[in-house]
Image (cartoon, rainbow, N blue to C red; front, side, top):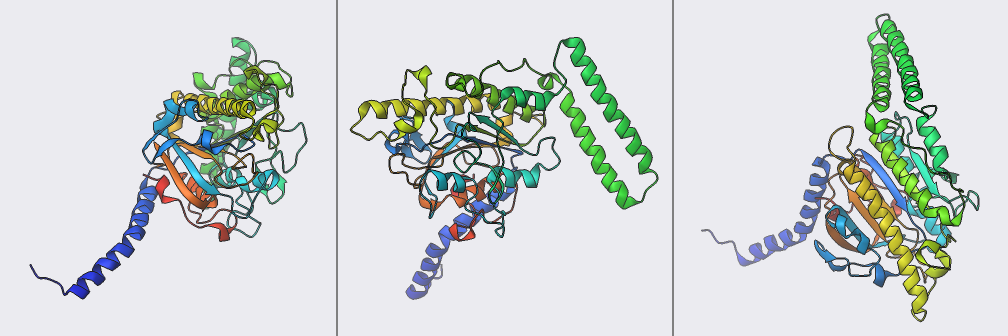
Length: 425
């Protein structure tokens, strides 16, 4: 074997050591690009930050667990389908309002790559334009204070709020229209809709033989859209369920009932191919909901300020946060058990993001803001990852890439570029 001179050998070794991390990142980027992209995005928001020592799993990487009594313990059944993301900061941002504005926009302006849109609206503009609902925003008591920076997470552009619908009854009507009633009424409504589609298909088919190749391509796109609409009318999954229970939209004690109805409708909208981008927003920052059903008498935001000297307040805040974790677990369970119209189960083809607008609820900062990812798109699930202050903009880029998009920045490009490669298998 030929021996290299010592200096040359050390030089080669040094180059290899320097290159290894870069090559590793490139390899992981390539694996992410070669993974089957997810087809859907779901955003789940709950407000008012966390107390990290009660939120953080124990261990790291793939060797982690949720301690007994911790906030995330209710997610244990879904551990293998999750990535718990710690140490992601909103750079240059602090407090409730600024956190809400930056959380899904990354501080973007009209001149940035994502044009000031929030994650859900940017993704919808790329993959949802031809769907019945390009995006579906569902709320749980988000608008009692009106529409403003404290109550909105979705942006169509800088300062352009996309309001969630807080009424399950309204969402149900938007989804199913006149298809409400007994079997005869449902059959009649379905027949009417199919008749309209058949008429449109016939007219387009007749026109297709009278135009040039370029126009035929556009007509074929319309025919494909009609086919998608028709598929959304068929099958037992897409038959209208029982209407949501009648409750007061802003009745404090109806909060759990409204939330469950909204999550069920969200899953049904995905299963019926009505949309590929949906969000469920629980209350809003500084949210005053009182979780009386847990035996708690103080509002969620008030409890979030409990310091370590207030053992009762801390315990009650942890209980309320565990309740939100239970709702996230319910949503994941529904997605995991519901068939995807393209095959498999919805969770396999969906990226689900649980987000918050604050890190430490007592400090009102936006450092180590809690995020939990779940689902498909080549994500390396079953991990607890610590990012050491990385900008959360790179998480937003990563979600986009898991959905097959190619943007290299999200929001302010000065706050981070490219994906977080550790998220991908």
